[in-house]
Length: 112
Length: 111
Image 1 (cartoon, each protein chain N blue to C red):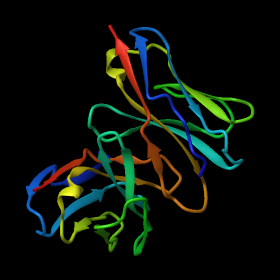
Image 2 (image 1 turned 60 degrees about the vertical axis):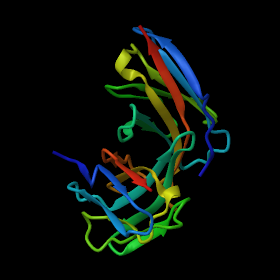
Image 3 (image 1 turned 90 degrees about the vertical axis):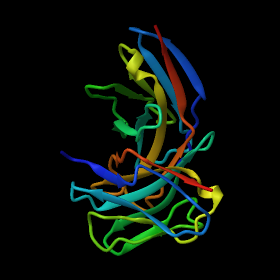
C-alpha cells in the first residue's frame, strides 16, 4: 500500500532535549516536505526537498533541521526543542514538486 | 505563486451540492489550481486539480472561470463525512516548490 509513515505519532518531551521525527515514503517520490499546523494558522511549510541531498526552507524553518540522504526518508530534527514548537506535524511526498501530495497521519509533539 | 482567498466557513445540507469558492485573481498562465481537504486532524487529502478546463473525478468537480481568476469545488451530494476543512492552492509546474495552504474553508454538512 502506498503510504507516508511518520514516527512517533505522539511525543511529550522537555525543552532542550534533541528529538527526531522520522518520515518514510514507499512510492519512490522525489519531493518531500514537512508542515506544522497550529490552531488558527493552517498548515505552514517548514522545509521541503526536491530530491536526495536537495533541501530548501519553507515559511517557518527556524529551529528545525532536515536531511535527505535517501530518497525514501526525510527526517525532521529539533536540535533544542522549545515550547513554541509544540504543534501537529505532517510529512508529505509527491512524485514531483508540483504534483499532488500524499500526507502522513501526523505527529503530535508537546514540548514542556 | 498566486495567493488564494476562501471564505472561512460554510454550511451545506446533507445530500445537497456543496459549492466551495476560491479566489485567485493573480494566478498566472502556468499555475494549476489544487484542492485538498483535511478531516479533523488527519493528514490532508488531495481532491482534484486543474489548469483551465473543468475537471471531474470520483470525489468532486472543479469549475475554473474563463479568466481563471476564481474556481469552485463542487461536492455533488454532500454527506456528513465531507465535513472538513478545504484548502485551495495554486501551484506552478516550475520554480520554487514552497507551498502555502492558508486556513481554508471549514465546511460543515448538516443532517
